[in-house]
Amino acid sequence: MATLGSPAPRTAAPSSTLKPRSGNPLKRRAVATVLVIASLALLSVYFRESNGGPVHHIQSAGASVLRPFEVGAERVARPFQDGAHWFGGVLHAHSENARLRAELDRYRQRALQNATAAADAKTLRALLRFETSPSFPLGYHAIATRVIARGPSPFVVKVVVGAGSRQGVTPLAPVVTGDGLAGIVSRVTANTSLITLLTDQTSAASGLDPHTRANGIVRHDDQGDLILDRVSKDQVVNAGDVIVTAGWRSGNLDDVYPRGIPVGTVTKVGQTDTDPFKNVQIEPFVDFSALDSVLILEPPPASR
Amino acid sequence: MRALDAARAAALLFVAAILQASVFSDVRILHGTPDLLLVSLVAVALLRGSIIGALAGFWAGLVFDTAVLGTLGVTSLLLVLTAYWVGRYGETTGRDRTHAPFLAIAVVTFLYALGALFLHFMLGDPAPARVVLVDTLFQTIGLNLLLTFPVYRFARLVLGIVPRAERVEGVSLLGQ
Image 1: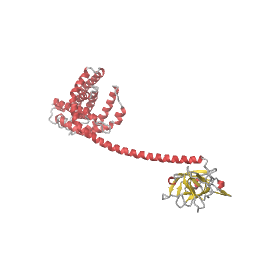
Image 2 (image 1 turned 90 degrees about the vertical axis):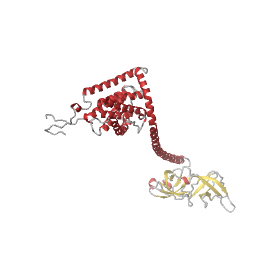
Image 3 (image 1 turned 45 degrees about the vertical axis):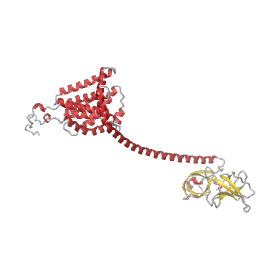
Image 4 (image 1 turned 135 degrees about the vertical axis):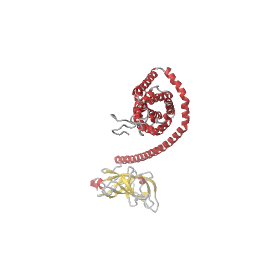
């Protein structure tokens, strides 16, 4: 330790050993410069000469000498490398597995979204087709909406849709899908409406066979089948005929269902001696179990 | 003593160059490749100074370029400059400091990558700067830092510490 005012003690080492290592700057710089020049010279010669040049030959000979060392080192390291590769492979497989699972989930979700979108598009196309078809009642305007809630049982007879009085929905407006008649608006709130489907026991609509002009009441019987009731025996109804809404008018009273909305196809026609009416069974066009989007047909203001 | 020292350093770097060429060049961890040769050379330069370091760098570069049949002189040039700088650092500010090897490795790995990139670019070799400086550099620095402690300890074991007689033991104040 050096103390001010007194010389710092030194060990008894000879003065020559007090020089720091590589102490001669000239020598140090000379060595470095020579080595740099040698490297550059080597590089230049190697770069300029052809593959058969002397430096290349020397290198090839040197490589031959080094080869056994390299092979030996490689063999010694091989088990460790294999172990590391195996460990890395396991880690990689693990992370890749997680990544692929996440990717699969993402694609599954996307496929689901696409399927839903495709189904929505199909439904909306059908609704649009119906809106532009001749079956669409004259003067009515359609409010397209989605089913947002259903009855708790599979035999659902009422659904809630996402349009209400604010969207222009009024009670007793007929409800259709792209396939045909679905039901009627039975209750309206500001933003939702309750739809009573045609499958409800209390629902009924006047029906007409456009081919034979036979008419009756479309309703559900006790077995839950859709029938065209009140068809007298003198009227003709054939299996395969399409039944549409009759849309009758009596004085100032209009049927709530406009004329010409498809209801279903006649599947069976029968009659008995004791029953004054024919027994006409109908297969509805609308799949009530997969109701997703509907059109609410708002009548022209004058007929309300 | 000096000849034995040089022989030990040469042997150490020979093994490091062979291992680098045949084993470590193949190791990829997080896209980085550990450079055992560079770490060993830094250890030698720190322990033995700039002259021995520069000579060792030239030797190590020759062995490595020969082993991988690369352009002779490229690695030598880079390692000579690297070892000289590290040797000077070890002789001056970094002397006897515990962090010196780690600091030297971090800095030198970066400068070595930069230098190699520049040199290969000048030689017309493929020199993808983004791959070298962005994709792999930091991983390589990390891996080299991991190697630093064991390699430096091993180099000290092989080369031995600097004799105490070569160290400056004291100073006298001017004017006394």
